[in-house]
Amino acid sequence: MAESILIIEDEEKIARVLQLELEFEGYQVGVAHTGTDGLIKYREGQWDIVLLDVMLPGLNGLEVLKRIRATEDHTAVIMLTAKDDVADKVRGLDLGANDYMTKPFEIDELFARIRTILRFSKKENIVEADEYLHMYSGLSLHEKTREIYRDGQLIELTPREFELLLFLLENTNQVMTREQILNSVWGFDYYGDTNVVDVYIRYVRQKIDQGQNKTLIQTIRGVGYVLREQ
Image (cartoon, rainbow, N blue to C red):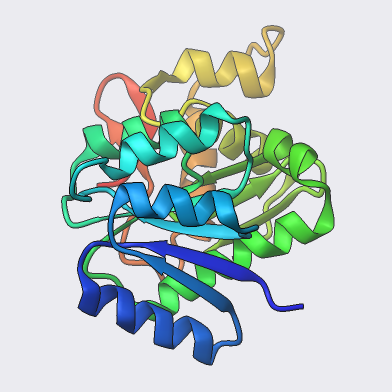
């Protein structure tokens, strides 16, 4: 049975293009153009993923997301926004969005993120997947399977690199000092040089940023590091 995707997007041309592209890929697709209609359609069906625009007339995308999550529903939600606003992205992720894409975006990148979400949801029941799956800006890390993907591409990390990336994902958009990273990833009984953090950050960056235009791990000079979009 084909996976089902609900598009809630007020710009009809964009919604139509997304619908045609997704249907061509074999997905079952529903479309709504307002937040209210989107919630009605959402409640009437069973969806694997919701593509949810932030700037909707009336009931905006963040309010729609809040109402979806208020029912303890774990359906995957990818937010779509025309504003590259970090505050909006943080709020959406805090409300339970699985991922965020800023318009205009490449359709192939959207497909890659959809495939990544579906890949994990098929491996385990949705409650377990939601508990152990960490996602941010196309980067996906699963604690139990220890698999890491960025835009659908598998990334191989050493155990220490994995723990470092997991710690940063658990603290997305929060600046972590070298000491905090060292204590969490290497342990309180580590007495070596804190420069080991810088070395491993470089290793992880090289692997997760290969072939990408955006660097996700940012250096905060004199303080430490943060995982966030540029």
